[in-house]
Length: 444
Image (cartoon, rainbow, N blue to C red; front, side, top):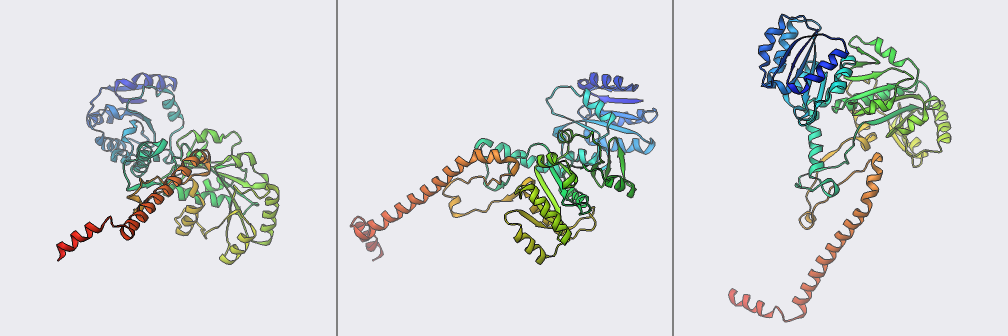
């Protein structure tokens, strides 16, 4: 049985969705300025398993967390579905809801239409997870607002720059980034690396999904090994990440269109993996080893791939001297020395340092720009760190970057000419003789 607290805007879609799902609505409160704490007393006595709450209909949304806590204290297995405007993203209220485990949130633009029918049905049948709801978190919303501010105030085709203090050193990465991890052979640490990368991204407050693309039953073992696993349809959640066990019907494209910031594909051994899917990923990582038999497998892979320079090679359990030797033999290929990280679900500073470099092309980076002498002479330009997934944008900028360099040389040339002319006039002409005599008379 369902209770609905909503404004008139979404009522029709709510009725249709519950009718389609064959769920009976036994209570409705429809208004625009509802005192949510008054409704709480009414709902305590009702036998409901789901409350649909439209945040825009509440007079003070700061009361919502207290409303949910009090009902949770007297009712078991009570579920909440929240309809919230995106303008509340990052607000303390939404942060409280996420911390309470309320993840079933349907976001709406403030001035958008009222079409939430399909979203309601989908959310009812497939409850959300922390990895999907993390975008409402206060810290995440702050980062995204910073990115949005850059897009609105940046230079060139991104808009007009209004501040010289902060430079966002990135192009906007739109949508979901796919990271594919494969191994040169089985049991080389592919799944371990995928989990470790996922935890690294989660600590940066990104929503992460990890997909098992190789039928190894590794994810089934992970699911059984932990007690705090939340099982859902087609997936399970653990440690803040969503895991999709191997399923031949799983479509990576569906996950890309979802709420995740990053999707990590655990491809298994490269020789038997879905190579076209691997090559479609924005970041392609091959886990390697340095033992004799592991290097033989790597050599075979390099011959098959013709030393593909777009792949990144991560060497696990490798000391510094051995890595230097292997890296030299890999010529122009991108090689990285893995950190010792026996527990992928635990924070590891050394592993984080490696992943910061390994994934730098797909991580948003913000840094403070230092002022220099020439910053006062010419207008500052945005420092853009182009990503492999944005090479087309980089190509579009190539012409403008050449123009900027020529403009800079022109400024230097003009300043040099002015200085030379001034020195010549002072030392070789009588133009300044009268001025010199005037100042001498004042001194005397």
